[in-house]
Length: 609
Image (cartoon, rainbow, N blue to C red; front, side):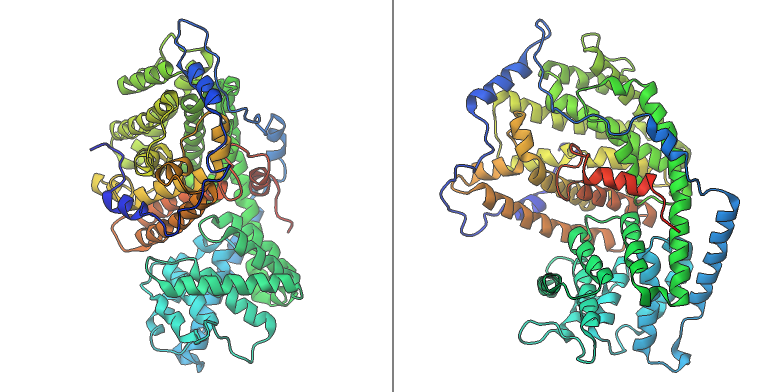
């Protein structure tokens, strides 16, 4: 069995033919690339070193972050001691707020008490400051869970509690929502609520419905109802600006394409617009801490970015012009969920390995000939520190940087794990490169596999595993081999993360890749299996398949097991960060739009205090 494979159970359930797919082939069913043009690409990729190859390129836009970024990141620093002292005072005050929340002895009903606890937890989590209050959050949610099955709840409390308890790994059933579903399919709110209060309840219902497990039909019903209700509310456009903004944000980002620091930055503005919210003294203090904490950590992250920029230049990676230069973007993604100061090594490791993986991907996908690709594989298997002499200079640069980066990452992991993890890591890289080689050979041969064959190879070639494993090993959790296998191969958790990335990525990249001569994708393979289907039907099928796999992934992520929470959280959030990159387009390739804005927001622009 290959190191990477898709289990028969996953693939067999993936690849059942959808009903009513027998529709005439439209003119746009397959990515438009003529056979003559494809043969031209194949011939160019096949030229040996005896001739000068005419190489394919992705025509990627250049690095967006020139030397002037250094000047920018050295401004507006928030690491002075008086900022940290102020933050500590606010943290202490908010801990007091947690301790003063009502209990069973307060005279209030258990439903009222539970709602207050949930709202407090929700605020600090949405604003990205929950890491300061882990003990307080645990105590609050233990209290809520102890009364969860006994006290009556309204829709707002039920939806809020279901989402928060589930995400914090309390075993709660989605059946709690059935109490609020009428015979007409509507979910019911108390008639005494104002229009905006009803919308707020339905918004919480929508957010809860996104954390769904397989076969939870009530969650599908809740999502469909809530999405329709919220979109209708947007069309009426007669609600407050902060609520309007909150609805748009949640509908756009959902859960799987969201990240903690992105959400926090948006909710600072959403809450800041809500005067009735900020007029409450407790809320004002929470918002002040969120802004201050964001700016303090942004200063930390800026300081960490400087050595990454030097690393890029020192290794001459700026001279590898055929490849995507995305080291800054990857670092910003790491900062979007790995917030804490103590995870500096993780952030740096993740950014460097992702940047190197992208360059290697561009060697295999476009620039390298099939002979060079095979030589690259052989050099990695021997773990040669120097590249083959026949490589052109830019691939030599890429290979040297790759070799050094993997070694340095292994050394960082050894400090945490107390053992050499490089042999294990190299097996992971070999499997990834073998998968890329197979895809390159398909291009040379003009071969389009079945969807099952494509996904079996496409899961490892998604690159999730090689960008996840080494950074995870630098965290402050020692992982034995059997625990590693619960988040890495052969776990279903890892398999579903890889598969979801492959499915999401192909729906965003297949047209651009086809124009470069890369005809093989989930879409073209599906159409090969179902010749009378259209491109639109293939996309619909794959999107539906992705949603099913994401539900399975959420169960694998949130179910109880022996994996340290920090390791599993970060492994899962890497997957969410890639989903975010593919939210609107291929953000790996086209980072000059929303991803550029993300970098600016997270790394360059402090929050106005």
